[in-house]
Image (cartoon, rainbow, N blue to C red):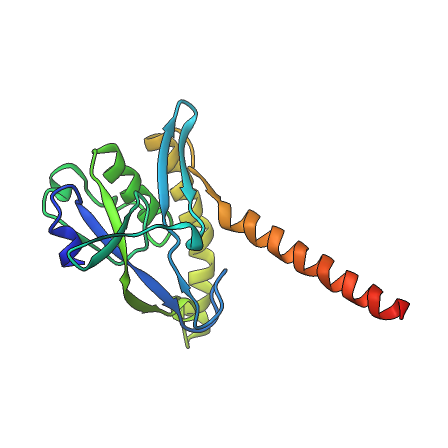
Length: 192
């Protein structure tokens, strides 16, 4: 990440994640980039995630990287990022990541990620509680935090940003193609 940040046009750099345990949309052991670009439109900001296989990497001086406005959470930032952008303390556990990247982009700061550094991510341990009373308070707080996040986003950005992903569409196309091929195979075997 330091090699990528050596480029003057890059202000922050992230890594990739390898999922350990059950994740929302990633199987255990898989890596995920989950990065993309931020677009500001009159009706509010939009995040467009790019398919993991669609990235083309620049390779300068042995440091591979791809430009992206929105990246994973583990990032290394140059000091100048904090001259224009502050972490929103009102957002906890929901929306803080998205709000920070929107602020970086609005501030004209440029981001990237490198596929050469992979950190482990444990989604299933995020809210681990042994005490059931604490567990119930986490679950109840989730609803209040979601309301606070929505209110903050509407006040700051005009709406909760839309996040789109080419990967979901491409995965559905691939899944449907596999189903169709399986159906043709089964029909062909049944005809014989």
